[in-house]
Amino acid sequence: MQGFLTASALKLPRSSLHTAIRAGWVCFSCRRNGALRPTTLPSYRRSFSSSPARRIDAAPKPYYVTTPIFYVNAAPHVGHLYSMVLADVFKRWEVLKGRQAYLCTGTDEHGMKVQRAAELQEVPPKIFCDGNAETFMDLAQKANMSNDYFIRTTDPDHRETVEFFWGRLRERGYIYESKHEGWYCVSDEAFYPENMVEKRVNSMTGKPFIASIETGNEVEWTEERNYHFRLTDLRDRLLQFYKENPQWVVPASRMADVVSWVQNNLEDLSVSRPVSRLNWGIPVPDDPSQTIYVWVDALINYLTKAGYPMWTPGSENALGWPADVHIIGKDIVRFHCVYWPGLLLALDLPLPKRVLSHGHWMMDSRKMSKSIGNVVNPFFAIDRWGVDTMRYFMIYNGGISQDSDYDNSFIVERYKRGLQGGVGGLLNRVTRSKAWNVRSIIQKAHEGGYNALVGECEPMQTEITELREATDALSLKALDFFEEQLNPGRALKEIMEVVFQANRLLQHTEPWNLVKRGEVEAAHQIIYHAAEALRVAGILLQPFMPEKSAGLLDRLGVDQGQRSFDHARFDSDSAYGVSTVPLWGRRTE
Ligand code: MSP
Image 1 (tube, rainbow, N blue to C red):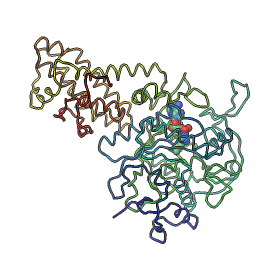
Image 2 (image 1 turned 90 degrees about the vertical axis):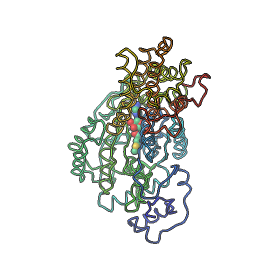
Image 3 (image 1 turned 120 degrees about the horizontal axis):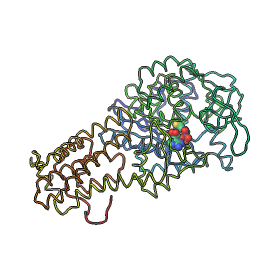
Image 4 (image 1 turned 90 degrees about the horizontal axis):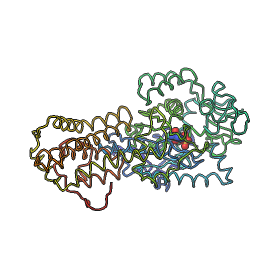
């Protein structure tokens, strides 16, 4: 079989890769053809490779979407939940379309920030990370994330990938040693040039400090010898790439910031710290006096789970690389859109196809952040409102270009209008009336019964026609918002607009009164259109609210095999209408 090399496909323990790296920088495929043919699959691979089917043939590239990996120095908040849900919605959308898709999330466990947090708690860093990583795993599960991987940067396979990557950079001459002086911010894990820091005064203590202008976080002066990455050598290639891919970063305003940064501020990147300062991280191969910079370590996570470097020519993308989209918050754009493509270009690896950077969740007009202390616990929020209501709220209200305010009253409002009144109201009106039978209406429609519009009143006919057209156009509109604009929130609003439109039709035409007046044919025609709008909306809502939409489609009696993207068209299902759950029992919506 023309195969893609995963550890499992080759039965190749990553430890042998490690040995090979230490022995000298040999191209992986050469090593593969040489003596390295070990036999067992290491247990960490088994426990983290949770993908349903890791394809090893040369099938079309699977879709690959990632979240940022979360620092474990503090507990998750709803800002983190937003990145998770967004990425999950993208993955589920692809699955709805029938495509193989992988979703990777995880935790960023090395670096000064985590080292200090562990020291503060007087816990060994690995133990500290184990506990906190588990909380993020629990959150992914609680949010009903369909992630295929949960990577931890302390995983042995990731460490080996980072060591390999570093070695390739050095081989190609991109790493050099030199003295570094500058401002380092532990909170942001970033160096800042002089023109990006300023003096500020702590409003509580009155003490002056130097802060990053961008984030407001305190910086400290450092002077050390460390390794640097020749990022400036890649300036022209980066600029050329941005020029050829103007929509690479969403939204466009952030793309412009990226270009301007590279044009005006690009410097070589300091990519290691002396071990005397930072020992919690991956040591520089062959120089244990230095630890690899946490952002280099972290960014490579996306490649680890894409199987790098164990790729065979022609099947490099069998696990999804290049990523279709990296989901990130707006505060980490530079790392993903300058440093990351720089690192990849240095090794001539393909760049991610798109980067979606979203806005922040705010509380009382300030970014929700653990250091400010204005965070909302996502576990409590999901317990209180339910997972699908939270998912719906976050995608509907969450900003891409703009920041969004978080407030419980907004969740209540969104729930009442969209889920209770909108979807729930429509579902009840369509399915729970004794004045008609949905199944016979659907049957009659597919026998050509409602081809001609009936009813005397012209505005009613116009409204029915408009609903039909909106329902028919919905899936392609949503597709455009997802795939071109990377904006699932807009797609969700379009879907909900059709639900609202169907409800308005029922309110204006009152089919229950039409039946009483003997205008049964007109009433049935209206119900048919409302049911179709609901069925199509229900199918398209699945990526956003997997549980509630399944309940909705069960109530409508839509067969499991008729719930894919291809069925989200008007008139495309003639066999539904008998609820598979009790209609008159407890309300489930
Ligand atoms: N560890 C880095 C990411 C490395 S990715 C190779 C990191 N971690 S983080 O835990 O600080 O942030 C993770 C994500 O959460 C980031 O995308 C960040 O933008 C996002 N958010 C943190 N606070 C947020 C809000 N208040 N609102 C929305 N998202 C926020 O950065």
